[in-house]
Length: 168
Image (cartoon, rainbow, N blue to C red; front, side):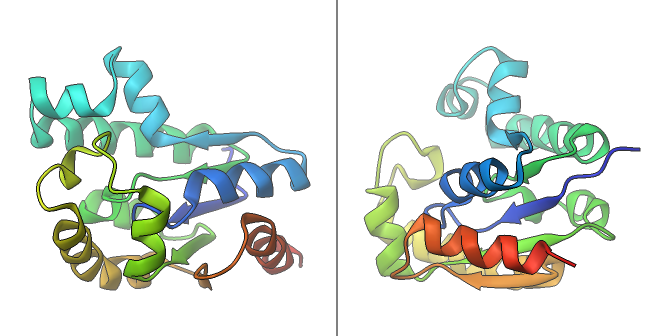
């Protein structure tokens, strides 16, 4: 069975995609993002899935995408920020190298830009993001084998730390 080199988890704006692509490039492996997998499966962007079918349907697609990626991807894998909400996903992460990209609210807000492309942040984005981060932080900690602080750091600096963690 193929297994990811590492799995990145963290809040929106923690840098999972940007840092994940950098880590994958340095290690010479593929990068995969379950949010992109979900969009490909559904044939539409995530905000449209939320609008058309609702969050519950999105989470069902997400569980399937996480299970498939964990079983078949040998590179760096980024999970959507809310993937850890599902007990099934947390259980599936046991035995994997899981890096929690930790970010505090000011940096997350700067990076996300409180964009409308994030369905859960559509109403009162700053307060919603804070709530999501507070709610999910213990879950990220539960699944993580390592935590990397991203605040005030470049994607390159963060990638260097992660690559260092992955070396035996």
